[in-house]
Amino acid sequence: MSQTQILDGKATALAIRLEVAAATAKLKAHGVQPGLVVILVGEDPASQVYVRNKDRAATGAGFAVSTIRLPDSVAQADLEAEVLKLNQDPLVHGILVQLPLPKGLDAGAVVDCLDPAKDVDGLSPRSVAAWTLGRPGHKPCTPAGCIELLDRHGMDISGQHMVIVGRSMLVGKPLSALALARNATVTVCHSRTQDLAEHCRRADIVVAAVGRAKLIQGDWVREGAIVLDVGINRGDDGKLVGDADQAQMMGRVAAITPVPGGIGPMTIAMLIKNTFHSAAHSVGVDPEALLTEAAACTPGAGT
Image (cartoon, rainbow, N blue to C red; front, side, top):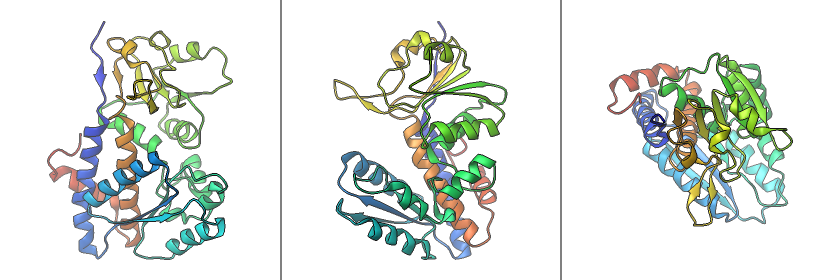
């Protein structure tokens, strides 16, 4: 039994947000303040919490933040019109349509309306084409957060075998593209994969992203592997648990992300970072240069 490293997404996300806040202060000297607008439809409790956390993080980074709240009875055409109007607003650099949308609304059609430059969740067709082809553009926040968390803990995925359990457009598919671009060998598993446990045992890195509490058992993962637990589920006792049985993995795997406090905070941090990128590009400023400068002089950043 060896000690398992906890990949603290909360602390890492805070470091990223501090860097973005410092870089935003510098960007304001160029006459621009990053603007983020979230569109929230309906009263889904989980979405309400997510949006509140995103608003708090963006405000803390120095952004201009607003939330457009629409009833679940909103017409498809009216929802799309809101997006198209924001596309034309020069003070808005990031647009986030909170998913899932209520039944009866076509989320795909709404996402199709997004200006790729403002699509800070990286879900529009042109954004998907960009990250699939390895071209510049916004990358989906949760997969990008997974890669960033590994990077900031000095874990190089080049040449490593990553097994992703889950093939959603939010996590599994984009993460496979991002990992391949970093020279990982990738296996994507799903509900029809035969002998899932055996696939997981071959992995250097297991990513659990299916939304089934404690699906991935301790003996499904080889000793010394890394586990990224993207799942957030409510257990019978009301506590949040991941898709991996973390108690079984402690002392067995080399590193694991906690639930909560792992990938979730990283998702919000990458949303903030994507919005900053949009704002900087809007005035012809190199966002990475400002972020690098900010990281060098920000206490607690660079984690």
